[in-house]
Image (cartoon, rainbow, N blue to C red):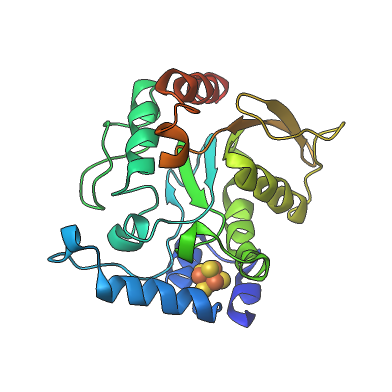
Length: 238
Ligand code: SF4
């Protein structure tokens, strides 16, 4: 925790990325991420797993910031890159490619050549949690990492895409922590909802988007056109 607090507000992006990658502040999540990396999923048995926290990834000067919950046990926790090597990443990056925010339509591993265009993706909690559910204490412990990253990129950001209600709430908390005002009246999360965050000298747009988890994509709650609508709007606003 002291390591996390020490960084907030005074490191370069490269320093934040390096420091977070060795963070061990949450005992339960450290144990889980490392156990998963040893046990592995059968289909990845021959591959090395990252098994550590996942830094933000993409443009260092992003106009679009995509905020997710946490890396997947066999996705980011395996590949070392957020939204890479899992079904959620497949959906998200394919859509980003369709709307012009990614150079290719697949996100397979950290050496696949994919680049994000004007965009950065960050996870609210940087370690894969069991059942994709961090505790409130773990969420709060990890918060200084996203806040440190936000402070370093926020001057470039024009639009934030919050994935799911958890991403939405985390975005509001993180921006409040760096001195931005929440929407007034209070805006509730919904797919396609737009709200305004007010900073010291300008505003930016917050877009709500259903998370591209299998729970949403398998059930049809989130379709490709729905995802393209929100990410296309983000691309237009950048
Ligand atoms: S969840 Fe965040 S604070 Fe906790 S160990 Fe991982 S990087 Fe560190």
